[in-house]
Amino acid sequence: MQRALSEAHTPPDIGSTPVSTTAEVLLPYQAESVGRARRLVRETLTMWGLPHLVDSTALVTSELVTNAAKTGCRRRMTVTVHLVAKTTVRISVRDGSRTPPVLIQASDDDEGHRGLGLVHRLTNGRWGVTVEAFGKVVHADITR
Image (cartoon, rainbow, N blue to C red; front, side, top):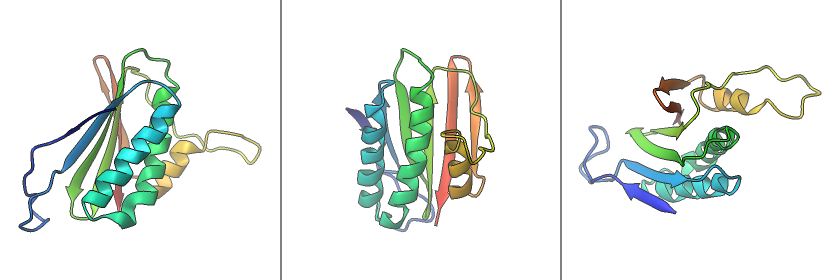
């Protein structure tokens, strides 16, 4: 697993202790990448002293990485965990598809189509997508 942590610096509302505010991993478009992305989230948030955000952030990460893995792209996806504020984490997943995800209201009989609805609920609607020249970035902010 390739992982990079940004240079340590002090965000404005963290205090005087320097912390790395970004962790990133490049992953293949495979189902196994979901577990590796969740591990990155768990380890990073624990290191940052935010264990109360681990479960919801790992769940949101799972949904975003699962969607990216289903695109059928050949390049690697990039999963980024970024400390936006003292209690806010942004998960970003960059993939090679320019097709944006669509929030679908799943019926009771649907076996799928609940992932973005779950992301929407866990982030209080603070998620979005940026289409780029060679793909897109889907991001979600988790705050507690």
